[in-house]
Image (cartoon, rainbow over all chains, first blue to last red; front, top):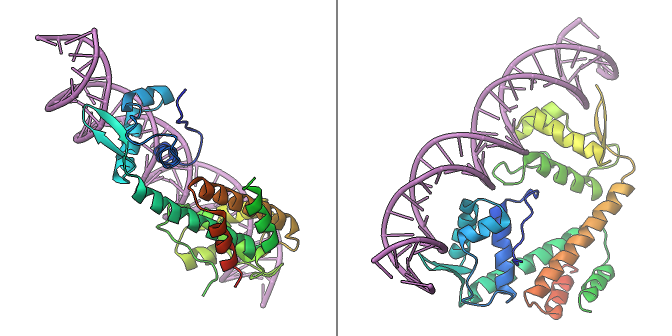
Length: 122
Length: 122
DNA sequence: TCAACTGTATTATTCGTGTTAGTACACTTG
DNA sequence: CAAGTGTACTAACACGAATAATACAGTTGA
């Protein structure tokens, strides 16, 4: 029972799903810092996809500072996620603003959006 | 000077951009009901893309009830956009909720999101 | 020691889909 | 009646994602 799941029928590439998926698990603390990730081959076998695809996702995650890889040792969650966390927050704030702007454009009232905001806090 | 613009370097398909673009112009009232759209060939020439791509976008827009096409006449904005408007609103509400949920997950406070909401209303 | 595992690298191939190209038909319009 | 309209069709191309098959150097635990 891995915490990592994939939808092969999605239009977003598998390696992108992996990147987003693991990033979320890391930043939310579900995967602890320095915790070891499944090996490239093991995860590929588990998800029934090609190891190269896992490798590609891991490479991008390392480039983003989410994980670090030690040859012949394994891949692990970064011990310092502060940089990744802040950029993720910035991105999230941007998504909220864009969604709100779009909603306003369609004539949705400020009060209704406020209700949506309250709904998530209970 | 067309109101319709395209970014050929974007990763989202051109026909999707067209669909989203024209939908927005229609629902925001920038394009009036029963107003005639550029012809398939004219818009293709204007945007320097293939007529088939325009045709594909127009076909989807007609399927979505955003426009209607009369053979040998042209394509026009639908006179009744209420159905499309309400489904667009539902989609927008969903986007806002998702964005808020993601922001909350990353530890962004309710107050900060409230500030983002207020910012769009001035 | 050594078999089994690790990340990493490389090359070739397959596959899906967006896009282009070219042509054609039936119809309306000035 | 020429020019323009939506629509349809087939073929080809382009690009990226994903697969397949190896290979190498290093670590690790029995």
